[in-house]
Amino acid sequence: MNPIYSENYTVNAPDLDFLGHVNNKSYLDWMEKVAWHHAQSVGIDKPLQQQLNRILAVYEHHMHYLGSCYAGDELELRTWIGKQLGCCQRERFFEFVRIKDNKTVFKANSVYVCITLDSHKPKRIPKEFIAPYFN
Image (tube, rainbow, N blue to C red; front, top):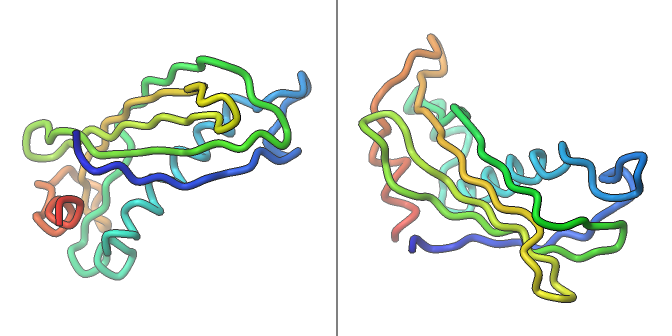
C-alpha cells in the first residue's frame, strides 16, 4: 500500500442534514479537502501546478456510506494514491474512521485525470505529481 495521509476532523452542525446525521455531500467535501491537504503536504501546490500548467481533476468517484456520524463525532480522514492508469489518470482512495469505536464509516475510490490549466485537455501526469508521494 502507498503511504497514507491522515488528519482528524470533528463533525460540526453545518455538516449535518435534516435527519441530524452527516449529509452525504459533506463526505464529498472532506474528500476534496483531505486530497488537497495530502498534495500540499508533499509539495504539490498551486504555484507548482501553474508552473507545470497541469492539475489533477476528478474523473469519477465511487462512494460507500458504511455508518452514520453525528455532531461531535471525531473522525480520522485517510487518503492515499493508487496506481497510474495509462498516461493521464491516477487512482486515489479514501477511508473515514470514527475514532471512538474505530468503525470505518465511509470508503471511496476516485480516478483523477491530469489536464492542462489553460485548455483543460488531458495530458501525461508529470513526474513532479508522482514522485513526491513516495519520497
